[in-house]
Length: 490
Image (cartoon, rainbow, N blue to C red; front, side, top):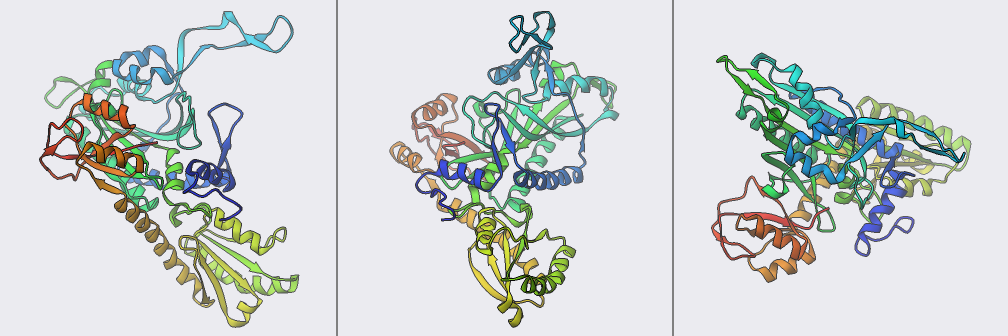
């Protein structure tokens, strides 16, 4: 273990919290339930943003920005949506403070009450569809394919950095379409983007599927999701894409003239991923030595640490390192040369290991004489000596290998922790051990609720690729056509 990190096997929750803290990713703020994302953590989020933003734009989407405040009357217009978010809303009732008459501090000015209370954005469907009413008149105005990068507030009582905070960062897409089929295709297309990002960038295998009616987004007709398995055997919902039907168009009277000259309501989708992905990244891959980052999302992909005794040695090593540094940079690899003399090389090795830097190159005078360099991999914690000549090409291919290896390791873990269960006793026993459970369900909300109440396991999704397979519900014994994925979840 590095610097006395707790072991995952002994206290997973404490291990997670300590990695967030010691890897300098984030910390709790003075505002209860909110976090400060520190520069190193934000650099990872920026890489996530950049990759996703490129993928959205490549599929025809554009970015915009909508207000932080939602009039309470907007939220009330879509009944199911309002009910789903009511308990999490932060409400603004006044717009001014004044000096306390007793001279101590400030108090709310009773004369500054808002005519209509405002909700601090928990999600933006309502304020955006109110705006779309002015944008959409004809089929020629469609589709509208908009995404926004923003912060949202959901007043959570039990919080954990990245996984569940009162305020978090995310992207939310909101699209309007002329036909139901177009909107359904959009919903599926976005889920594919999320799955590709999770697997190709985060090296995190995911199951794609549809949520049950009781688990879907408030106000949606269908919610699609990607679900990932964390190392403690719990599931993490890592992205959702919602087919909203015409619900929000009807609530905000968004009609358009179709090609036949008839008036009809627009069709909608919304979709989002958040800084919760930072939590997924930590929990899916990291180990008892600290953070493990897939190279594509690592702020520093390669660190070069000189090992020297005096200024003369350092100068010689630096001279040898410069061409390597430049060659790596020319390949688009983010590289750091750490010649800072405030810390010894041993301390630096431990620090970069803790922060999950994928590749570390160590170079001392003996290496220089031999024309070699020590290459350390973060994913396997292995070291090997390689020729200094051509090292940039070797590191470039090594980063791809590490990216793939991290994915393969996570996939193997998921496969080893996915269980097919047929009896209620086996189901209860497996829930306690963790993992994804494939079991039959009779399709009723009553059974789903009973299983949740008795075991805390929920249906994570009905997988797209699940085969038709006649069976009996694990709880009720009634007929079932296919298995669904159960797990305890974050």
